[in-house]
Image 1 (cartoon, rainbow, N blue to C red):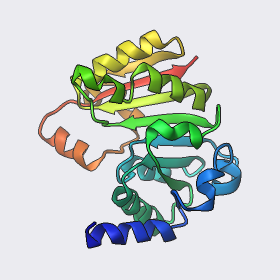
Image 2: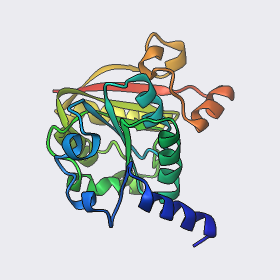
Image 3: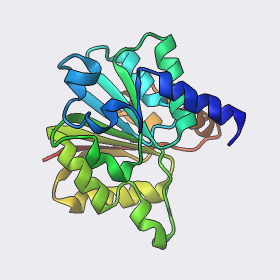
Amino acid sequence: MTRRKMHYYRFNGDAENVIEAGKPLYSQIRGNWNESFFNNPNPIILELACGKGEYSIGLGKVFSDKNFIGMDIKGDRIARGSAVASEMGLSNVGFLRAGIRYAREFFEQHELSEIWLVHPDPQVRDRDENKRLTNPDFLNMYADFIRPGGMFHLKTDSDFLYDYSLDMLGKSGRFCVVEHTADLYQSHLVGEHHGVQTHYEHIFTKKGYSIKYIKAKLL
């Protein structure tokens, strides 16, 4: 392990806004995010595969009356997001270092008001469908966490994942696609992302790539 990664892992161990294996809340947080972590009753929004948490941080700045959790398995990415959130004084932003497949260990039924999935790996090979974060199994799990009437959001630069996700959401029986666009920044839905862009999304749009967006409501 590199010295830099060791630094990030030590940082996470000390960071109050990070939950990871070895910390008491790691095994106790399910169903207790409001009371034990955020210390308020505000709605909770989860960003899956958050990377450095750019979306959680960006939305946390816009909505001080909501709580945001960035979830990712990569400790170095979590550490960077944690540091930025702390420097900005965002007490409504936290991070969970864990794999998405194990999310049921950390979230109770109807504990979340929204889920954001921003530029995940599209996993285009047929043999990798089980890894796509909008496959039926994952969507069913997300539906358990979101409150009735709550929202699921997807942003992607992948035509393949956009079409696949629309298909899977339509067939899920648990979500209704409210709005979608194959070119977010040229549509009336541009305000839906609240001006938040990831680093790579900024690069993609500068190169002329279109960003796709789906907003689905839990039935």
